[in-house]
Image (cartoon, rainbow, N blue to C red):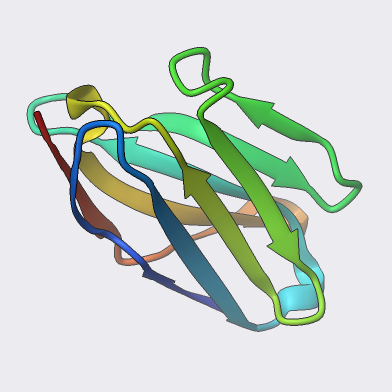
Length: 116
């Protein structure tokens, strides 16, 4: 089992920055990929960025150049640095971990609100 706890959400003005954290605990050695997703009201959950255990990263086109995903393997934390935030970035942000045997885990989500 893997437990994920997100933190760092909040209210920020457009153009500002936030850093989200996702702390993983439990069977963290089974994790192969970590990702951030988001879900805005009335919309489907969408991938924001992900990173594999090999260090490969991937970003949604809408956040490229503004968001950076990184991980601290020693602390089992994945970060999402969000810069130049826009009102359309407002959503609940979720951390997701993919593990062996296609098992997935989700965090509880953290609200990010960008005021224009």
